[in-house]
Image (cartoon, rainbow, N blue to C red; front, side):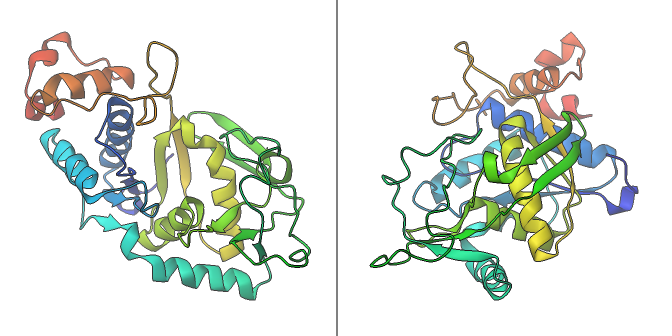
Length: 281
């Protein structure tokens, strides 16, 4: 992940479906440190495109936690919920290029499909050649065809993915009218000029789909580094779904110290009792 210092642009893009927990703090610290040590910029984006699961209250909690932990981002916070026109324009470009198709399948009908590494159903191609008679379009999918995506991750090494067997034709516009994370993230990163993405390895399976979308839209592909994922005592990834405890912003120093230690920075033990400002310094 080497680049000219002035050219580096990183970002942290949490989903505001709950407060900041330790796993998210690790991702924030890793991306922030990488950007700052490269002399680059670090942006903050709220990935609230999935509006039924997200809330302004949770977004406010995350922003307050980041401020308490001493993070400083460049520019204004970007909100995906305010950028639907950009996603619609990208989808129209893909329609014009014949890369997408309407799908009438329900979630129940796909329940027996094979499962992708990220837990999503692998689409069997039911509507790829046209909607079955009597079916109305519910969602829009992109046809992946016979394509293999490969990239070199700065931490995980060489990654190769056969999209047809590992993801299938994935959704860009959902049946409920909301744009999918994959499309929104790709459009946002390109518009923000993001050159490097540092995030948790739980998102590694999504990266080939995002690179494929970048190629279809003629957008640049950033460099990637997927950090080890923090887990609980049961070996489950720390997340809202596993009820990960929020970071205690009344004592931000110990939380920041623990995140740096998790990332292999080996901060001196005496910093475990230091202030956030002293730790960053």
